[in-house]
Length: 415
Image 1: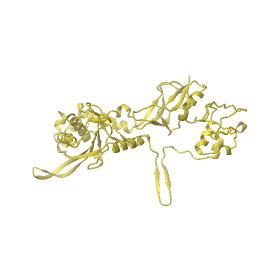
Image 2: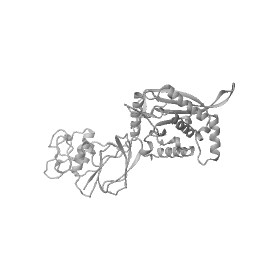
Image 3: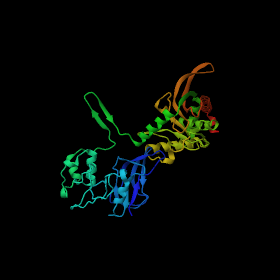
C-alpha cells in the first residue's frame, strides 16, 4: 500500500523545510535508511533518511522549494500503484508532479471528485474559473496558474484539444534559474543584489527580533587584566596535546562563576523563572548562512582540554552543516566571542530563553597602572547582556566580578 512521506520536524523551532537536494528520483527503489534528500532547516542542512520502503512514485517539491512540517513531499509504494487518494488528501501541501503524467487528482477547491485522464470523450475537471469546456492536464493547469496564463486563450495539442505541459511552455519560455542564486539588477543610477532568505536566516531574524523587543536588555561591561591568563595558556600549550584558546578559558571561568550566581543561569518562561542547576554553555559559531549555537553540556564539570575539543568539533560540524538538534538544544547561558576580529567590545542579543549572554572582545595591549606605575598591560573587555525580567544590575555585576577574579587568577580555573 502506498504511503505518504511527510516533511519531518527536525528541530524544536522548525516550521518548514526547504528541499535542498533530492538523492532519489521517481521510479527509484528506496530501502529503509537510504538517503532520500537533503533538507535545509532553520538551523542546518540535514540528511533525510527513509524509514519506509518501496518504489518512489511521486516527488512533490522541487529543489529549493519550502514545505511546511508534515507537508507531503513524496509517496512510496508498489510500482504502478494508484496514488490518487493520497494526493487528494494532501490538499494545498501537494506540489505538482515532476513530469507530465496521467495522475487522477482534483486541484479544484470546489469539488473533490476525481478527474478522469482518459484521452477519449471523457469530462475533464473544471478550470479555476469553473469553465468545464477547457480541457487541460493537472500539471498544465498548475503551470498556467503560476504564470498567470488564461487557458481559454490556448489551443491544446493533445487529443480532443486537451492542453498539456508543452502547450504552456510554448507560450512562456523563461530560462530556469537556481532558486538560491543571487539576483542582480541594474538601472542607470544603481546596481544591487537580492539574495533569497534562507530558513536559518528567517529563524535568526524572528528569534532575535522577539528577544530584543520582548526581553528588556541592559548591558554591563568590565575590563579584565589578562596578563596571568596569557602566561598560563602559554604554559599549558607548551605541553598539552590539545591547544587551549582564550575562548576556552573564558568559557570555563564563566561556567564556574555561574555556580556561584545561579540567577544568571536562569530562563524566562513567561509565568515563571527557571533557575537551571545544570550549566550548559551555548557557544555562538558564525557560518555563511548566519549563526549557530551548539551547547557544551555540564561545562563546569569539564576540563579545559575537553571543552577545547568539543568546541573545535562543533565549529567543524557547524561549518560542514552536520550539527544535529541534540547539539544545539538546551543552553542555559551563551558566550559570543568576536575578539579574533579585533573588536574592543560589543553587545550581544540574548539567546532566549536564556537570561544572559556574554560578549567577549579582543585582548588589547594598552598602558595600565600597577603599583602606581604606568606599565604595558593586556586588557580584555567583556559585556554581559541581561534580561531585566530575570536579572538585576547588582546580580549581573557580581557575576562579572567573579569572572574577572577567575581570569586574573587563572590557577583557580584549574582547581
